[in-house]
Amino acid sequence: MSHMTQPDRYVLVFLALLALTAATVGLTYVDLGAWHSIVGLTIAAAKALLIVLFFMHLFRSKSVIWVIALSGLFWLGILLILTLTDYATRSWLTY
Image 1 (cartoon, rainbow, N blue to C red):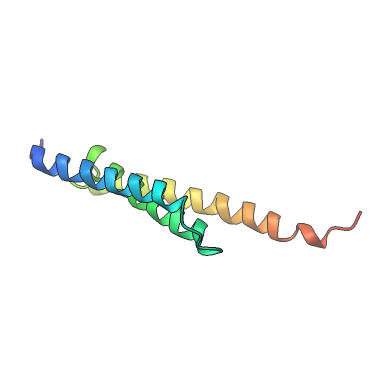
Image 2: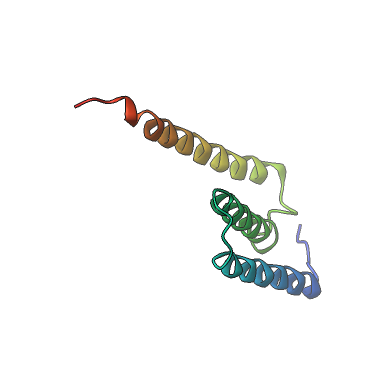
């Protein structure tokens, strides 16, 4: 079962990726303080979502592929939480 995606959709996704890349570059010149990392990671997540959904064809995939993709994202979340937990508790150590 093959799904054909029209070329204009790829062009729109490509233009969105270019706009998000320009936003990332423009973000380097704006001082947002503590929000700088959050905005940068949000832009990066939007770019990753566009790539996964359209260029990796997850948008029209079977539900098993969605489960596999979400399990990878879940595992990444576990690793990030464990890393941040380690980092947050380092001030408790006394040498």
